[in-house]
Image (tube, rainbow over the protein chains, first blue to last red):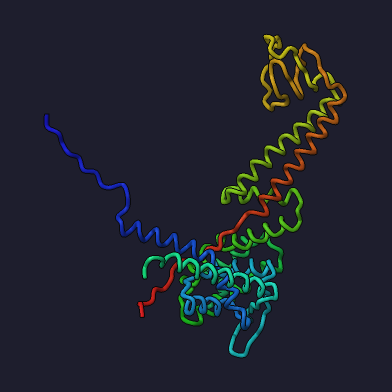
Length: 133
Length: 222
């Protein structure tokens, strides 16, 4: 009796593709956690409008956030009382812009988020680098 | 590019957005529309093609959903009224485990509440059809011949213990008499409290996704 060896393609994705997918998922989860922190941080010094907030997040924080996710998040923070908005017409702008500013409640939240973030990153970095000396 | 031409994609997108924002208060939807219009105009003025700007916003209905979800959730949380909470929990049931679980609990509690109220109503009209029938001893072979199963079950238990509405009534003794009223009112109240508690807990614990895109620019190592 002649046995015929059948080779089937692997059911799993190639390693590099699986790794990339897993990396993307991890990033998504991590950035979900810091989304509010990043937004509150942008408007903590001076009021900013949506497009400017988007640019700061992209250029300075490296967060590639889409318009479709920024404005609902701003709406949520505003409804929660963390930020407040006001329409302004500035000289260099052809249209009125909606500026967002942090509230006292938002400042307290930002401070709490920052404390948590810093405590967590210090502890976690120490944990990840254990035994590397 | 003229953003106000009736056939251009931006105008169509804004119209769709306006329709999708209908559940929001007028002030909120007008502000969201104005902000989106201003953002699009500015990006187009910077030389970005309109379709590219619109793709960053995504589908108008999906974009509006973020605002509408937030508004409905806030309204349900602040009003604490049963119907808005029930509507909100059902709306989120397919997207949130908490809301799904809350919906199931609410449906079960609601069923018991309506059942008890239905039994009270029947008891007023036909007192012999609602009650608590016990056939002692419980270990004896049962002698009750079941009627055809109800489409909507209004009684619990079979054989030796029957509680609620039963037509025809069992031949063994009924024990509660008029005490069935306080019993049913008690069940209705407990069901209502359970319904509200499950809705309040669900509404409080539903979390909306932030939707951050994880597309981080990777800079070379220093």
